[in-house]
Length: 398
Image 1 (cartoon, rainbow, N blue to C red):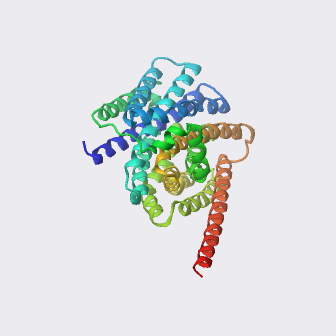
Image 2: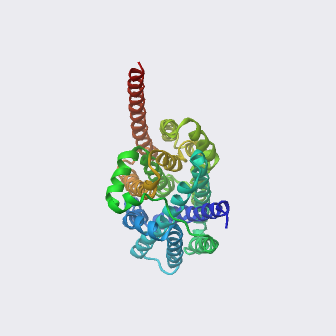
Image 3: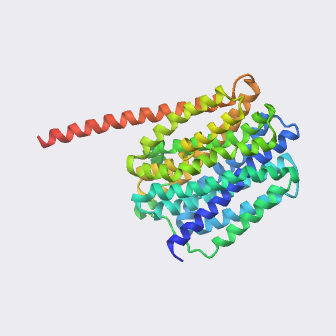
């Protein structure tokens, strides 16, 4: 089986995974809101998926190096299928919490395996494009997810049944693919612990990890907290289901162009601009949040600008790290994403509960503004470092 065909199988699986995640967050949020569960408790429940990501993360690098990436992806996909199926068998706050946790474990295994496969096998000059395609397919799935969530009006089990069937189809397509292993530095792999490699990744690529962190915050807040905020404003379930995919659709539209631009102009520069512009967009949404179509337009624009921050961050990390550290880097990207996703719903839920007369979008704007400032400081320091190196090189030649 060709590498190209395997690549498309991988991104197809990621699309289905995005579908299940995009369905799960708003579906459960709407179900719990209709059952009278508070927004803060609803937000805490949403963290189960990301706690699963955190718990499994330290145990993935060694098995992936030893057995390859396919077994990790296969086991992760199977766990997601089984967990989604059991959502249809019971309705219990704590049972669903455990099932969300297991979906998080399986999804992270799937994503780490596919991300490592793509980042270690792609041509370095095209890494932005390849990772952007990965992001586009995840975004397509994630954009369709809220529409699937709206089928909850036909029965609580309906979205879970459809998602289970689609995940099973993707999993079966994966089985014929050939296994592959990540690049390794044999000397360093044997002498260094996983913790040591994680520390190197953070030291070299902390700024790149802010991309997945930001995407985690945005994804979770917009899909867990925004439905609650919108329903309390009097918008209908169909309004919410139409609004939520706008962010993901915006990301799909510009993901590949931004990836190509990042190959040409640098991912650090593109990320700085995206965080800065998105801050202004969410401020606009906050000012006009009484107007549904203005909010919809802001969500679409925000997706076009910042919806690629995960894939841009992943590509930026690939630029900064040696290849043997990429598995650890991909794992830490997942951890950064999950930390953002855990913090997002909790912060958003508390914001909605405690600051009732302020727009929900103010909270998102503040977070984006902080990240924009961090990137500006990084860019300024990098410019200063390059200037010093240039002067030193000039002095040596003279």
